[in-house]
Length: 221
Image (tube, rainbow, N blue to C red; front, side):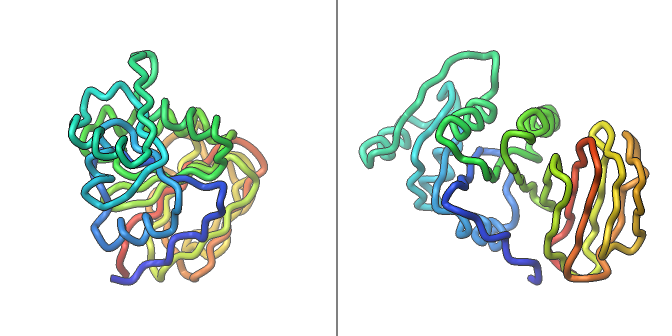
């Protein structure tokens, strides 16, 4: 496998674990190893125990957690934060908890892929909070990032598929390091930014306004 190392994270970063689809094990392990703090969304507690991860807290209504897992983790000092409200799903509860704990770099694993409705909910929730924290999330095949700021620089491998979506619009979009460059363009809802690709290891995306969803697909050349 040949893919970029995860972006180095700071002490203000946390990885939230769900119980949905995960990236391939070698990719998953490299993502996890780049974080030192963890939160589980309800059934993500099963994943944490399987991977021998000790999270700071488990947050959610606990309808998909195994009581044995909860007891095992609670006995080791993990906080069990049972929140039964159905106005927010467990992912949103976790993001709100992470923001309360002053985390401003958040990763999400296990929230894309198993169910289409939950994957759409993940996109909507992350977009809702993307101005309050940098949130990166991964599926079985791709890495996602809502770009709310003015610029985004990242490492890519040759010919990596890079897709840009206006969400719903992004203005003044300029790129460097992509096969089909954009120069001060507007991206709206639709397919215009789909299936671009990297021609350099360093990719830079800049914009003047709006929100852009960046999708980096594929772990190999």
